[in-house]
Length: 57
Image (cartoon, rainbow, N blue to C red; front, side, top):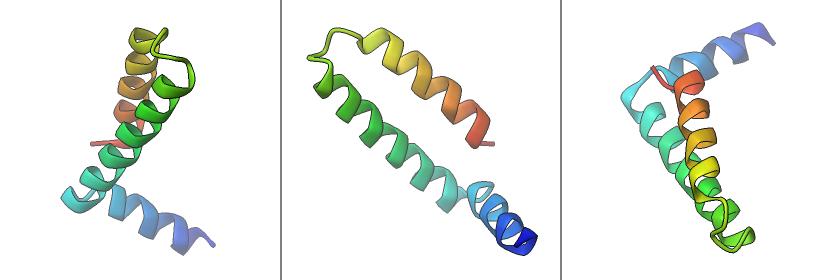
């Protein structure tokens, strides 16, 4: 199991993984913004930035 975790970490640390995680966060942010009627855009952006900082390199 740890080998799978290592592979996931290696992928996220790659340029391709960074692009994939950014795309996923953007899609999730857009969905959250739509679900809240655009009323919490600043908070959603802050959360997405924080998540990107933890996931990205």
